[in-house]
Length: 251
Image (cartoon, rainbow, N blue to C red):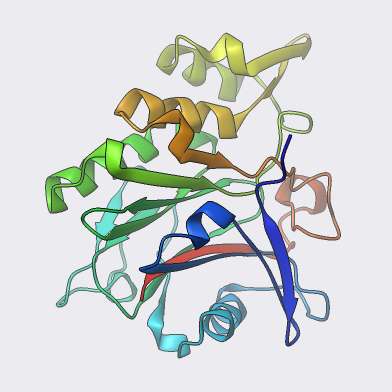
């Protein structure tokens, strides 16, 4: 399989990018991975790193209060996510000059770009968000708010914990079974009451259901648990681990 990502190290910063997204001339994007010469990254440090990579000021990098919800925030000229105390796990903008990002450490980060309407979105989808179909709700919000059409969208699904390492119990598998009649295609029962599920592929299937073309959905199939030199992993390292950020902006 052809490698569909590039890891860049420049001026002490390290990030991953998806070449097909780099070809979209009105955006910039980055999946900020584990930095070589840094302590554990928290939200503030990630914003500083994103600002350096994208040549912005720190205040131009917008994050959200992530709560494993299905809530989607829409930026406009009067309203920014940083001004809200509410919980969101996706945000959308058509504003230039601000970068919107989501923070992860095993969950699935997704960047969406509408090439015709020039709209971008950043989505955080763990198992709860996946079960609540946050990705589909983000696509719908893009359509409702800006007139976006799924067939015009490109998706970049960044590194997350892979099916190889993501073992779950009945608490997780049962709501997934109720929600997705195709779950058996993306889950393997390894032992009694234990399953391994593929969150990236379930999110991909949601995008296809919503109307995105399969050829426009790009998955970076690197497991955050398997590559400790590149990624932080909550499942591997516990609650004290660092975080990564997926960020996208309109130039």
